[in-house]
Length: 208
Image (cartoon, rainbow, N blue to C red; front, top):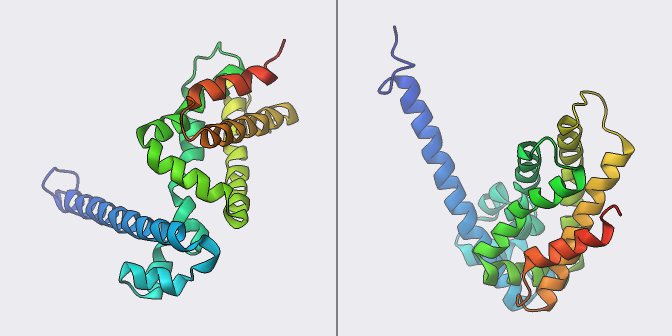
């Protein structure tokens, strides 16, 4: 045996190294994103160049672009995992739960992140709302979530074929409810409860 599968073997060492690199990369990415966010808030998103972002972070332009391909990604990269998280939450919902309720409960994974850092997420929400390029990119990101969420709904219903138009519409409506709830939460300066706003938005479209 070469020890690759044992705790102290080469395979474990390689796995540990990969994990360490991932952690280090995530830390650098978070630091660059914070520097970019502060500069955007101070100078305005449209008035800041990638060169200026790199200079403020103390890295080269090529290094900055290795972590974020665009300025928009430096703000919205934090949302990259949301689609997968919501899809996983959907699959974990009780089998006898209707699709609309399951979608609502799955979106708690997003609401929880707003609750964990209300000041930070409020500042990001305002920056996005005030910047057309960021609004457009965020909607594009959410559009990319739709296939995975629709597939998760189909799996809950026991279907292994193409998802129906009805499921696609439900997913699109659920994401619109999320956006409307976040807009109202932001307009209230975070005083309103995002979970309550989500409940109210979903209730407006609930089957009667």
